[in-house]
Each structure stands twice: as C-alpha cells, then as structure tokens.
Length: 317
Ligand code: FAD
Image 1 (tube, helix red, strand yellow):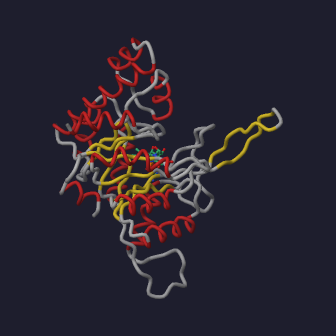
Image 2: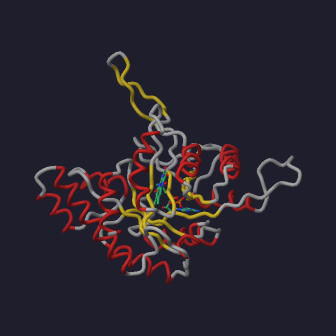
Image 3: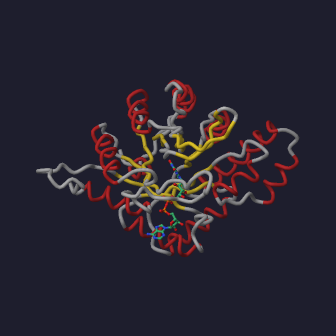
C-alpha cells in the first residue's frame, strides 16, 4: 500500500516510527530488538533513514587525523529485512548526498526488485563538521532533482540509454517540510515555494521536521493550504531526553524549544527527569495533533526505543 492509501485506511495505531540502520559492525538484531517493542503498536509502516559518508576525526598514535567514514550503511537491506520479518510496509529514505545519479538509479532498481513502493525523498544532511551540503559531482543538489529522477523511472525512463523496453518502477514518494522553515532558507515563503515545487513534481505527502509547539504545525498547515499544497502533512515529533537537547536540537535542526518547555527542562535535576518530561510533552503534543486533524504522527526514534514505547502507550491507550 502507498502511504496516502494507509492514511485513508488507518488500521492499528496512528503512529509511524523512524529508525536508523545499525552502526557499521553492529548486528541486525539491535534494530530487531527495538522493533519487537514498537511492533506491538501495529504501526502502518516503518521509516528507515539513509546516511551518507561523513568526515570525522580518528585518533591514530595519539593524533587526531581526518577520515571519511560511512557509519550507517545498509538502508536497502534493512528495509527489506524488516518488510520480510514483520510483514509491514517500509519507507526507506533516499538521499542526494554522497551518491551519483547512476548509483541512485541502481539503489532504486534494488528497491523496486524488493517490492518496496514507498520512499521518502530528501537532499540529505550537510557535513557534520562544516554544516555545508556538498552534492556528489555527478549527483543531485536538491531533493526535487532526485524526485524528478524517480518520476522519470516511474515512466520507464532510465539514465542508461541502451535499455530496450524498460520496465517502469512503481514508487510513491513523500518529501520533507519545515514548519519553522529550513535552516538554509532565507525566509518561510521561499521555503514554501520549494516545498510546493516538490509536491507539484510528484510528492504525495509531506513529513515535517520536529517541532515542540503544536501551533507551529497548525500555522504551517494553514500556510501550505493557502499556497495550494493539498497533500497530507504528517507531523514529525521527537521527545527531548537529555538537558543538552535545549542547545543541540536548535543548533542541529533549526527548531525552537518553546519557553515553557525550556524552563521545565532547566528545572529538571537529572537527565532522567528530562526524559520523563520529554515523554509527557511529546505524548500531549501527539494527542492534541491527532484530535485536531493530523493524519498520523511520525516519531523520530533516533535509535532509542524506550521513550518512544512510553509515548506510544500514552497515545494508544
Ligand atoms: P531540499 O528540498 O533540497 O531543500 C533544502 C534547502 O534548499 C531548503 O532551504 C529549500 O528551501 C531549498 N531548496 C529546495 N529546492 C530548491 C531549489 N530548486 N533551488 C534553490 N533552493 C532550493 N537526512 C539524511 O541525511 N538522511 C535521512 O534519512 C533524513 N531523513 C529525514 C526525514 C525527515 C522527515 C526530515 C524532515 C528530514 C530528514 N533528513 C534526513 C534531513 C534532511 O536531509 C535535511 O533537512 C536537509 O538539509 C534538507 O533536505 P530536503 O529534502 O528538505 O532538501
């Protein structure tokens, strides 16, 4: 089923979970043990993130040396494994960063052969050290360019020109939206303009960046509707879990921690108090969003399940 079809026929819980592939060298069981807990809530589908290589510093002989590493490979394989083991639809993310158009085409062929129909199409994060996004020299600069490539493949139009009678792929795609605008965008209107372009190019739904004040989402949905964006807009939520999130999340994702939440975090004596606060805040957000027309809640697990399980219990029970 495509994601819009799921949204129109919701069975199970109104929650989807976004998982990260295990770090390189870890067993697939690490993700299965997380999923064993989350599948109890019968999510309609599971998202799996994609990660490009990154520049980091490794310590060699006591010295820090720069190195390019790919910490989390395996998105295609893990998506297929989850689909097979849990009989649930999966939504692998597919990103521009780090991939040539030909490599992307081959990954898409693998996904099509595996019977995976849904994709979340993204540009990908910038470099962890500089914060800048550098496209592959034979790759795409923006999510919309990748979206166009996928739509062409859905028409049987591959990059390779020697193919006789090419078979069209069958992907249904979603795109990312930013209620508080994307960090690099000069203003909300410019960001909305590019979001509308992604929808006009074939994105059938939007998943939002995290936010901590539901009014930010309601206002975003209003602005999207006024701009002629009519597709479902799925709110993305992440619970705060440690004190440092007050600074890390705004810096990394360009999101605001509202005053009330920030003050409550400051009053917490320990990180386990912040964890509990995060669960309660996120559960209240999810309930209010669902009561006011949100089609589903996309929960960013960031590789941790215990707080997400508590939120799912709070929403579903
Ligand atoms: P784009 O749509 O390309 O937009 C990026 C910026 O460029 C915006 O400021 C936009 O306004 C502007 N822009 C867009 N099109 C144009 C154009 N044609 N000309 C000029 N400017 C333009 N990152 C990962 O690496 N892996 C993941 O798995 C992943 N999953 C995510 C899931 C969700 C739900 C969200 C919200 C984000 C996710 N990200 C992931 C992060 C995402 O890749 C970053 O936020 C990235 O910086 C932007 O991605 P995008 O697809 O929105 O890019």
